[in-house]
Structure formats: C-alpha cells, structure tokens
Amino acid sequence: MSEAAIKIHQVHQQFGAKIVLENVSLEIPRGQTLALLGRNGTGKTTLIRILLGLLKPDSGSIEVGGCDPSREAVELRRRVGYLAEDQTMYGWMTAIELCHFLYPFYPAWNQALADDYLERFHIPRHQRIDQLSKGQNVKLGLTLALAHQPNVVVLDDPALGLDTIARKEFNRDLIEHLQAAGRTVLFSSHLLDEVEAVADAVAILDGGRIIRQSETETLRSEVKRIVVNAIEITEVSPPAGLLDVQRLEDQLILTIDGAADFVERLTELGIDHEVVNLSLDEIFEAFVIGRTHGWPQAGTPVVV
Ligand SMILES: Nc1ncnc2c1ncn2[C@@H]1O[C@H](COP(=O)(O)OP(=O)(O)OP(=O)(O)O)[C@@H](O)[C@H]1O
Image (tube, rainbow, N blue to C red; front, side):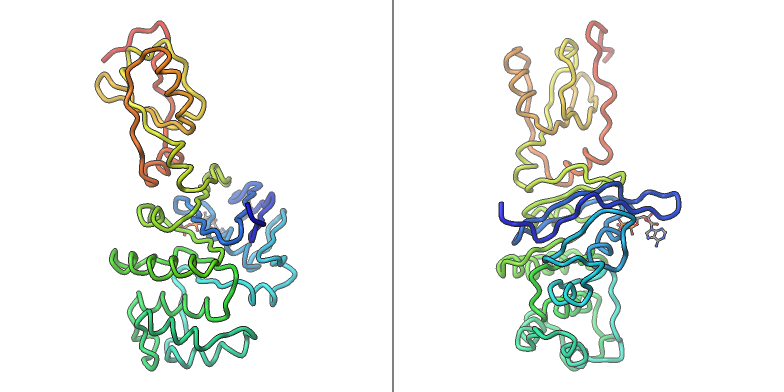
C-alpha cells in the first residue's frame, strides 16, 4: 500500500453531550477514491469539516496532503480541493468572473484546465451563476475545486439534489476523471448503487465510529448472504461476523462478514446452503440496520 494521503488518528468530536465522532481512525492511500458512507447525521460532514480545518476536533490528529489542517490553513487550501454539500456561490457573477476572482488566491491555478472543465461540463462561461441549473452549479463547484490542481479532493455528498441521469453523468465525468489523474478522493454519499461504480474503497461510519473500511471488491467478496434451512442449523453456533438474521418461512437468511469460514463449516457438516452475492447497498444496510437476534437455539425445536 502506498503512503497515506489522508491520515485520521483517534479523532473525537462532541457537541455538548452528543458524541458525534468517537476515536475515529482512517487512512486513505494516495490515489485511492474512498467513499465515506453513513446514514443522515452520522458525522460525515463533521469529519470532512475537521479534515478541512474548518472545525478543530476535541482530540486526535489529522494529516491531509502532508498538512496539519489546524496549523497550515493556507498550505492545506493549496493542496486540497473541496466541494461542500449544497455549496452556494456568488449568484451575480458569471462562471468566468468567479474563476478570475479566485485565481489570485491560488499560485497553482490553471485557467486552461478550468476552461477545459467548463467546456467538458457544458457550463456557460458568461451566464450568471444564479441562472445555472443545480447540476451546472455542482459541476462549477467542482471546476473551482480542481482548477488549482490539488492532490487531494474532498467532496461532501457532491451529487445531492441532482437527478438520476445528472448524478450518473457527474460520477462518470468527475470521479473517473479524477481517478485517471491519480488524485486521492474522499467523497461522502448516500447513493450506494452509484458509489459502487466509482469507489475503490469504502468506510462505513456508524454510531460515531468507522465500523468497516475495506476495498470495495474485498468487501463484496467477504460479505455474503447465506440461505439455509432453519431446522438444519439449530445445532450450529452463530458465526463470527454475523450481521443480519432474517426468517422467511422455514429458511434462515444470514448476512455474514467473512462468510467463507461459515460456508466451509456448513459444507463440512453437510448442511445444504446457498451463497448469494450482495450489492454495496445491501452490505451497507446489513452493517447499519442488521439484527442478529433470532438464531435458532440448539436443542430448541424451530417453530415454522
Ligand atoms: N456545530 C454543531 N453544533 C451542534 N451539533 C452539530 C453541529 N454540527 C453537527 N452537529 C450534529 O452532529 C451530528 C452529525 O452531523 P453531520 O452534519 O456531520 O452528519 P452527516 O453524516 O453529514 O449528515 P447528512 O448525511 O444528513 O448530511 C448531527 O446530529 C448534527 O446535528
């Protein structure tokens, strides 16, 4: 694994009595696109604000693109591109006026690159920003976040509010372009079916903690749904990594992280089973709302 572009170590953040981040640690290797997943209000934006130096955590250490965000604010802005959730810009300016307004702040600003993005994203250069569509606004925000050629890009729910096609187009144009350019990208999202196509890795934030971080493919290969007969399984103890148990008539539908060992056990015991691949959406759901009670007790007859 290459050196981490983002290092988050034991970050703790609470607002009053409410603990939002509880000793969160996360490392994102250079060049990786990582999706930060979590339900509403789990602290994704709070973590992103800490990464950007907009909020100082109660404790813990952060390094983004080699900078300490709380102490190197200017250098951090040079190295990091940031698109905030629902970002608003000066509506009375045009896209090109906004570029001209911003570029003196950034020594590495590349107007030819900004022009290229404006053209690629079909953003009219001379139209007032408040007359652009929601999608064009998001893409303009991204253009401005990338024109200074940052190595690290942080996108807070960038596709929020876009329609399905616009989101897909956004993901294809933007994330894939960033990946090709070798940038490290951290983006938060709710839209798991779309995340799956673009994220090399995911981190699931829940209950103030990162409960799972993994490369997307690895997660998909390790978390499986296993369908077994409920009666046949009464003598088997629940596996480690059990995330969810559902009953459907005489069948048990189990979602297991690290399912391979359990599958091996079932095979050894001669218990019939079916292994089902899951989408990222289903995996995420099992981690955050899975319920593990309902395992049939050994020696107890199963009522169907
Ligand atoms: N400045 C603040 N003061 C008090 N509470 C805050 C503050 N900022 C965030 N919170 C609370 O912290 C929790 C996490 O908020 P945050 O915006 O980080 O979540 P999120 O995962 O980004 O949510 P969403 O997906 O809805 O955008 C919420 O309960 C929110 O109300």
